[in-house]
Length: 312
Ligand code: FAD
Image (spheres, rainbow, N blue to C red):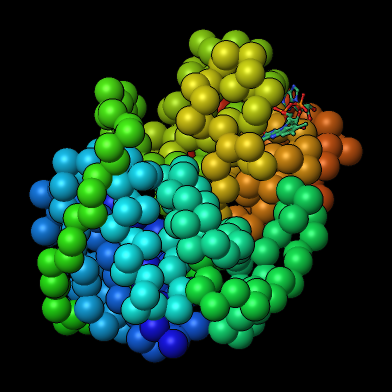
């Protein structure tokens, strides 16, 4: 069985979610290749070749691929699939954009957000906002799979796979790239951060959110997250949202401040290694998943925490 992993990258660097997707791919087969579709992405392809267990790296380059247009990625992958039995990609916004197109072109069902590989055709995936795990078996000849990267350990380094150029397809003739606006931040990226500090509706305003959450995140070197209530109220930007309709994170440490722990929020963070919750309501559901829970007003608890960190 030959498996293709579509790399997650920004043309300059390879994202850790690729390493995690390689781990999922290696559970399917030892014949794993990586496709880097981009523009000026040779360094990314070389980095992909260093992932342990990878057989070879295919590099496809064009402007449309560099812009991440889903139609262009699909046009590269579909012809390649004559040589592969499965294609895996991290379940990022990008992956969720092109993966269904690839599945449709191959006339197979997409298998979404797997968290475990049982065997070559059987996979486990969360449903109902992560409240149940479903085991699905696919009889399709070609498997098109998105991977919840947080559920897999990153494959290590140490590989020496060769990089080969491959066709860039015919681009995206019906789609025109207009513009993209990227948020620039010195903080770690939320989806891959080792520590996340999140604030909820309790913050009450954008100013209070920044006053309380930002310094703690800076002190811990953490990414910032938020509940949907905090995002909807305008206390935090959209891309901070953690949960069913936001980002799924599984950091070493997740600190939830003034967040009740609704199931839709838990769906995005309950796999964190250590969960710390600060909430003044002892019955808040967040305490059911917290490893360390502090029943306290955040206005007292957070300054005390900052003092303790400063003294440490
Ligand atoms: P609340 O539920 O209002 O909780 C605020 C908490 O702060 C309370 O527990 C309160 O005790 C505590 N608090 C108040 N004051 C203080 C204080 N001074 N000190 C300490 N604690 C205090 N939500 C998400 O987060 N992410 C999602 O992706 C998401 N997707 C959704 C999708 C759907 C289809 C639906 C229907 C809902 C979704 N939600 C999502 C919304 C979710 O149901 C909750 O409404 C939301 O998570 C609540 O946010 P919160 O915990 O900040 O607010």
